[in-house]
Image 1: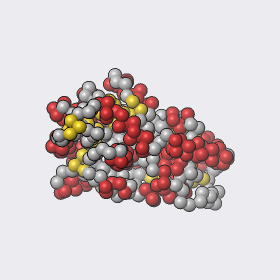
Image 2: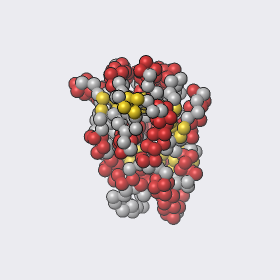
Image 3: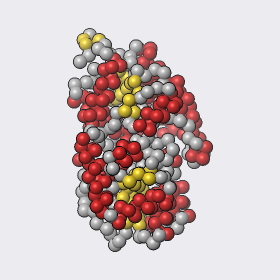
Image 4: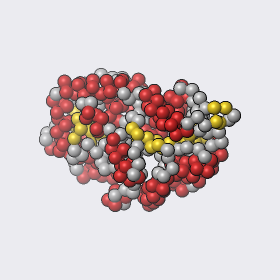
Length: 392
């Protein structure tokens, strides 16, 4: 089959990595899988980023999109629509991922007679008012308009693939559709521990990885540090990520009196991120509200680091079911309690990691993910004839 993945841009991030890995895994299964995007920034991504077939705008325009998030939001959807319309000849299935991909596919698919299978990482809905006011006007409008157009687009897909039960319930509630779960994989070798994990001067080293955006609720990690400090524990927090809340989070650390215990690093290469995981005692996974899956607790498991996970994260259910993390309420006292349990009981921490590694080995692999997606693509597209011959 020829499957066109539609991903607005390719740069370091969970959804983008998923698109790359899916493309590579499907190609190993004998399919042709180009990726339509506004630009490709390979920094920090796995080497497969350089081996993919891309449908991109002219180089100078792609460079402008890479430099300007606002331009990508405002002009990008129209350019992506043109790219997909032009590249869709001979395509068997359109596979949109992040917005505006599903909207583009909902226009091109019916016109071209091409079935659409939507890989939906999370249902786009407008941010709650208290979160919306903390980001820029353009992004607020994008969330509002994107959510409305995504609802309109949901009438088109032959199948909706989601990563977890939480998102499946959300698809049912918002669109009245029954989605199929296809859990993603992980390149375990990219995150395997590269350094011994030993306490440094009795300090508990915490890590939080993710975009500095209201959905990620990173302030909870800082509040957890303050709570642990109040209990007399020596603790340090490293926050890895970038986004619109960087200054706000620094102010929160100062306000809570823990600025000396909190440090920030921008997005890292996979090798650097693996070292951060390996150096940490506990990963804090803090999302709240409408946050889906989240790769970070699985990356930490591969590096040998246990996690405390918000029960509002999409991956919480599968992690709890496999006893692969401490899942708890998204509150500072609950997170601090869980951290203290892990520090006080190394056997518990080791058991969580051991169970998590079995989950990664047995269920969360890219070949298994590609196989689940392939079944949906075949069911949606049947054996359409393309380029003068039957699809394999």
